[in-house]
Image (cartoon, rainbow, N blue to C red; front, side, top):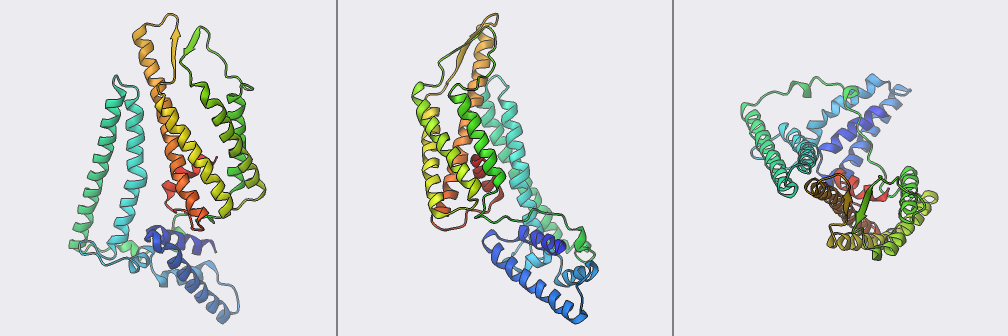
Length: 330
């Protein structure tokens, strides 16, 4: 039942993360039981209008979620779940957007490191400002007892389509295929089988130390082998997660070691003044440093997820954590 799934997914988004699974399971069982009883009474499957009537009797997702929230002094029902939803938008949409745009702009300024620190501070300040503004707005709405008419006049069929939470033990084959191809492409370049076109009259100096060649080769070869196993056995086991914990630790160690020998590249280019060349070198090395830093952070998050799998626990369900840590799997 697509409408029921959309209804439950919308409620899930508004619930405390620790209680989501139990509450949704309880609601799903109750609603499906009501629909089954009504179908038995009518002697036929329910049509869409009758399914919507069952959901409307249960209540708007905001009101249903509010039943499972702790009592709030400043912001109460029905505003509190909507307030939490607005804060989540600031946390997972506005703040990352401000941060990425600010850092990207800072990279092309005269003093990238100083401007980057300022951009991070501005993003944090803007997010805090929005949190304060949203809080004040909802307190005012609470004090004025504004009636939210959409809580009464709503249609389950108009709820947004949200992604269904996947089974955390299953490994999408698309991830395994993408990860295998990505590792193979990197190893082809790393071993010199695949060459990137050279820029004429461009000479590189101080490349990445040769000591990194074999550790990186071994790590990506092992990752490629694991992706191959996951392709044919697409589910997580505690033993397989423990193996990937070793990969995560090695990747983190390599990332730290690589950042310790930064900057990695210097180059000469005919016809370019030393000042402009130094600025280009700084931008290139800083960009590569941020890439390695982001990769190391991703492996750190993936390490936490894999440790939980290895201990027989479910990985963290936070969307940003799942995406950032999962990005290293591909």
